[in-house]
Every structure is written in C-alpha cells, then in structure tokens.
Length: 117
Image (cartoon, rainbow, N blue to C red; front, side):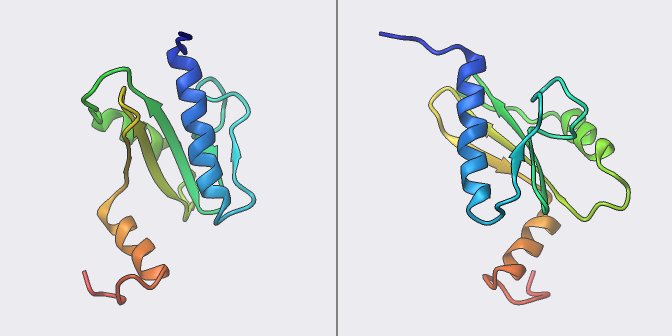
C-alpha cells in the first residue's frame, strides 16, 4: 500500500478545488508557489482568492488569525471573495466564507432573491 504525504494530499486537494472553480471561471489558476510565494492565496481567479488547507486530523479548526492574514493580503480595492477550503483526514471537504459573501453568491446565482437574508 502506498501512503501519500500530507504535501501530496494538499496538492491533490488544491487541484480538486481548482477544477471546480475552472468550471465557472476559466481564468482560475494555482499560485506560482503555493504556500511560499507572494500570491495572496493558493488559487487565484477573477472573482475569488481561495486558500486550501489539508488537515491530517478528523477535526478542522479555523483560526481567526489565518482568516485575518488572508484578508489583510488582499488589495484594499479588491472585490474578490476570500474563501478558505479545508479537507480533513477522511477527505471531507469544507469551505469557509463570510455570511455576506455567501448571500451575495446565492443572489448572483439566483438561489435567493436580493435582500432576502
């Protein structure tokens, strides 16, 4: 049996998220050097900054300092939506974004009416 490193699992997770984002935004791309570059996040698109984290644990913890770091790296005038995506050891996947951004996405895709929330 072959075991994948945490880094390999993380890269696979990034590629999975990228493939889903490319379905709605063909300009989406991985950052040049995920985790070690000057890019703001792991995945960049015209509408989103997406940071991906693979956890080798069952429970996932979102530290507000990680969120604040992502937000602070975004240009002040940016209209892109920041999203944190997590995968746990069981390959369960989650996304975290601010509720106002979630409502905006739902309105844009006509899932809810504007101002309904």
